[in-house]
Amino acid sequence: MSLIPVTILTGFLGSGKTTLLKRILTEAHGQKIAVIENEFGEENIDNEILVNDTQENIIQMNNGCICCSIREDLRETLQLLAAKKRKGLLDFDRVVIETTGLADPGPVAQTFFMDEEIAEQYLLDSILTLVDAKHAQTQLDDRQEARRQIGFADQIFISKTDLVAPEAVDALKHRIQQMNPRAPQKAVHFGDVAIAEVFDLRGFNLNAKLDIDPDFLKADAPHDHDHHDHAPGEPCDHPSHAAPQAGQGHHHHHDDDVKSFVFRSDKPFNPARLEDFLGAVVNIYGPRMLRYKGVLNMEGTDRKVIFQGVHQLMGSDLGPAWGEGEVKTSKMVFIGIDLPKDIFLQGLEQCLV
Image 1: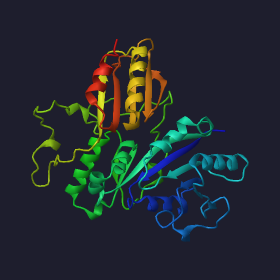
Image 2: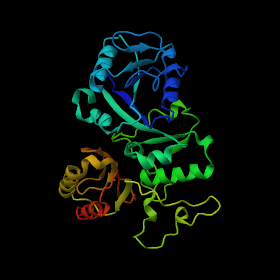
Image 3: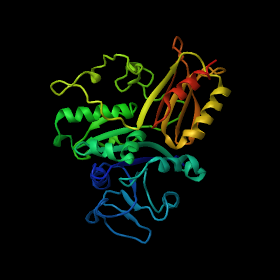
């Protein structure tokens, strides 16, 4: 049986998760989706769209989708759904898990790596984060959970942009990009997102046939902010750092603890040294390392090595061969909370051949 793809949906209270879930559960999109929620209630799926209740807390919708609340623990709920699917009692093609508005999505994502039984049945596709444009700046200032949700995201949907000025939306997008440059951002109307933009994003895919994001290795990619790095005190001519005038530019007063940085090198890595170093930093900083991902040039193989991790869990895989004439560049992106960038960059430098 092929693995069941899973999408984790996160976002602060009021960001539009419920609107998106209602669409998934009631719209005629032709897909059979099981939605797992922390609880049924006002903040989640409204009771009038539920068809019938059962003892298992699994509810069949009119369009063939399934709604299910987490009973004891996520792992048990996933096991129950997979067992019912195997026995032909339930029919669904994929799963969406909604986290509570205050949740750190990390432990949910880790379930799919740590638990062998779950890993044999499910494949984590991506983490989607919804952001409320009207309240996001305050939430990001005040709540680390909101900042973590941005840091974990593979795709960010910004809702309620019609309620704020365009300059405010630009400032928010810029701030989010500084925190997580690898997640594309899209403005959506009250969580009204095309189903095609929600599924099969392959944010966690380590499949050898797939390279990470096609733009991932392009230095001039629109969401790559590393190439204008400059030392403290050094002048920077990047437009976003210019003095604000007539709604342009960006106020740099947000010193968010969630930040990202990139390591690049054309020299190959020594595998043993790199493994030792990454093992050490994950051991020390793992809880603060939200997402990290890379395409590596390793000594001893003519194939790309693709690696990624969430918190303390890290995995790597052999990817496709380097193309003829392709520059063998290693590139690694780290997103985390107050990570010591200098220690990481110097340490990685010392792992090179």
